[in-house]
Image (cartoon, rainbow, N blue to C red; front, side, top):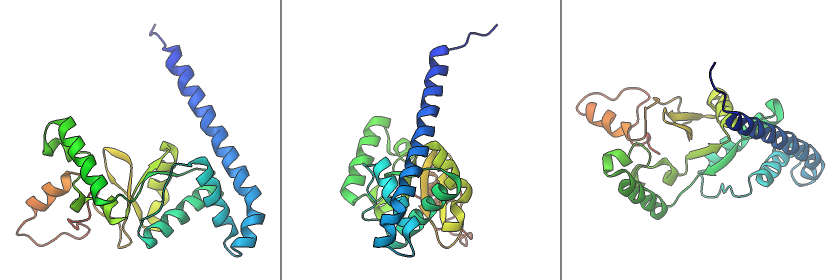
Length: 207
């Protein structure tokens, strides 16, 4: 008979219960905020109430610096997620300035031992869509699953197999899904001297 890790099972159960409570409380808060939001933003009360409630659930998130169209798409998507399906989508990282991205890249190069290995997770500033203001690292996993399923209607797409949390705003249509951020450079090299493939824009496929 296989041994059951009761500690791990209890931990998973606790996390799931906690997340269910967070979802319920956040949606209730959004409902309660609708009358106030109506006074501030008539015609967009549910949208505004949703953003307020989510900012309370995820107080550390920062949407500043995002491309306006990208931010609008993200806010519309998570409003839909909350009101229609009761799912929460929080932002762990959005816009980053070039200096911050450069520091992250250097740190990853040191940690992984090479630039090639680092690029599986982090890209230099001139290649990062975070610096461009069109990338979103989201949480929790349930919210990311929702965004992967429904995000296309807002121009939001998961970009990498190894990063369930990373999405990018691509209003021109669904881009190619890549194994990891560094794979974009491989695609660019492989495609050198050939006609570009539809859906592959080499300066857009980056974390």
